[in-house]
Image 1 (cartoon, rainbow, N blue to C red):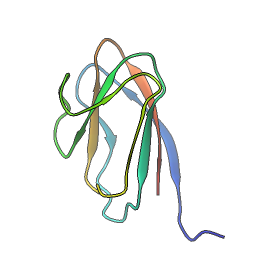
Image 2 (tube, rainbow, N blue to C red):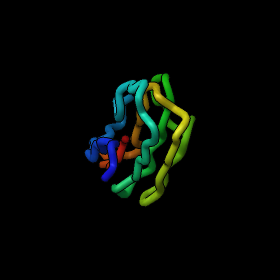
Image 3 (cartoon, helix red, strand yellow):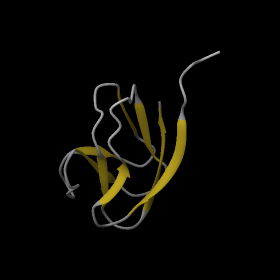
Length: 87
């Protein structure tokens, strides 16, 4: 049995800077999946800006086990859902 607690959730990312995940100094890993049809850009520790940062195409995912700070996002053409699992 695992001693880790996972958080599974979803966030609607808009065409303006949107908080996806707050800082968590105990984070071991997070995976974010673009569950929508629009491109989403991720920013680590800063405001998200279109066409900058980590680009997530529809269906793409991003995983990190190094970043404990905030993760923000912005969608290009319309609100887009992202799903995530953090532990």
